[in-house]
Length: 255
Image (cartoon, rainbow, N blue to C red; front, side, top):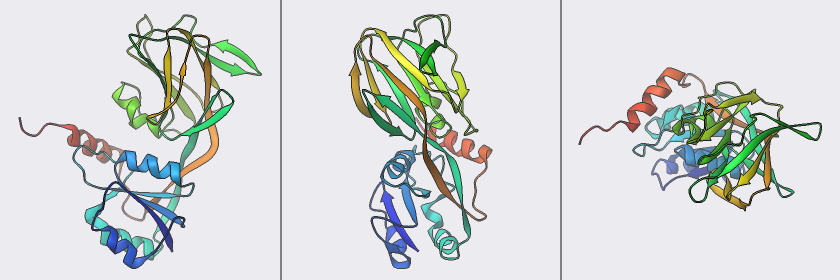
């Protein structure tokens, strides 16, 4: 088996992987060692299945990683014995702006550049725009995410954790108005966000695409690009265990 390695640091356990496997720029799978940021980086660099392994940094949640570096020998045993399966998580998000396409793992974000940004949200249907909310939204912006990104920035912003790959969500950031709740839409929907007043920054996965002036808009939908991970036999972590681990990693132990 040939593997690609993407790591958040020069972990000593990487040597064991290099001893057991053929390591190169491409491979049958990509081993991503670190936290959620490393997982996102691996997904941008590699189109095949990813095996996320937690690197153990304080506060790093590693939401999709079922195992940490401490279990490296067991991980190697599962890989060499082909004791794993590939699980499709969902499609990457496709952001269309100014004729160009960008592919996000976690989220697309319109954020304010000064005090606020005003915008409207629409559904694009048969080439026409239909309002989702009848009034102009104001505040720090809006975040669009699917199941994968729902546990990242979206969760911190008060959005829901999404367990279904068949939907994605609009989460409003510090919305100034009577309606502040997230909106969940079907996976086949095409969402358009249009800046109405002030300027906003369009970003995806922490990377800037452009600055949007009033009248400019962008579209978000689920793409045809799959994101899949490697599940090791007997090592899959349950939802409750993940949440317990993530919450515990964020708690202050000592003052």
